[in-house]
Image (tube, rainbow, N blue to C red; front, side):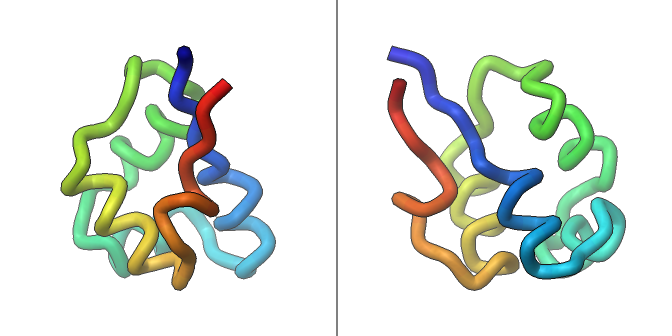
Length: 66
């Protein structure tokens, strides 16, 4: 089973740039770019939680299992 982040779709739906989301989540914009390009197998749980909080969504909305 693969973990897929819906990061780009959620970010764009909220009108946020990668840089703005990174600032809200207190992580690097390089991290955002890498996750949107699926260059990492999966982000760690802390990163997923920070992203969900910054996006104002649940973990379920951010992460799907395929």
